[in-house]
Amino acid sequence: MKRGGLLGKRLVLLLALAPLVAAAQSGGTRVGYVDMKRLLDNAPQVVAGRERLQREFAPRDAALKADEDRLATLRQRQERDGPLLSREDAEPLRREIDALDRNVRRTREQLRGDLKARSDQELDKSWQQINNTVIEYAREQGYDLVVPSPVVFASPRIDITEAVLDRLKRDYQSRQGKP
Image (cartoon, rainbow, N blue to C red; front, side):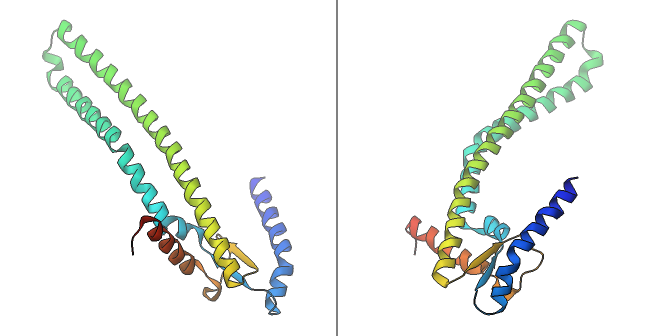
C-alpha cells in the first residue's frame, strides 16, 4: 500500500509540475535544481553545528567509554578469577558487574536520545537558513521555480547547488567575522 501511495504522490507532483515544465521549455520560465543533501552535508553552518555537538557531548561520551572499559575489565576479572573465588567474593563482583552494565545501557540510551534531540535542533536551525538562502538566491537570479532533490533527473545546466553553497559559505564567514 505504501508503494502505491508513493507512486500516486509522485504522479500528482508530476502532473502539478507539467504546466511549469511546459512553460520552461517555451523559454518563459526559469527553472533551477538544488541538491539539498549536498547542502546539508557541506554547508559550513551544518559543519559548525556538528562540531558544536561533538564538543558538547565529548565529556559524556568519554565518561561512558570509561564505564564501558571498566565493565570490560570487571568481566575479564570475573572470567579469569571467577572459578577461584569463594561465593562471598564472587557475589559482590557479579552484583557490581550487573549494576554497571545497567548503568552503561541506561547512560548510552540517554546519551543517544539527548544527541538525537540536539542534532534535530541544530538541523532545524541550519535547514531554515539553507532554505532561506536558496529562496534569496532564486529571487535574485530570476528563477521561477527551484526543485529540491531528490528528483529523477536534473541537467547540470540548471543545478544551482554550488552557487547556493558558495553563498552559504560567504554568509557564514561574514557572521564569523572572517575574510
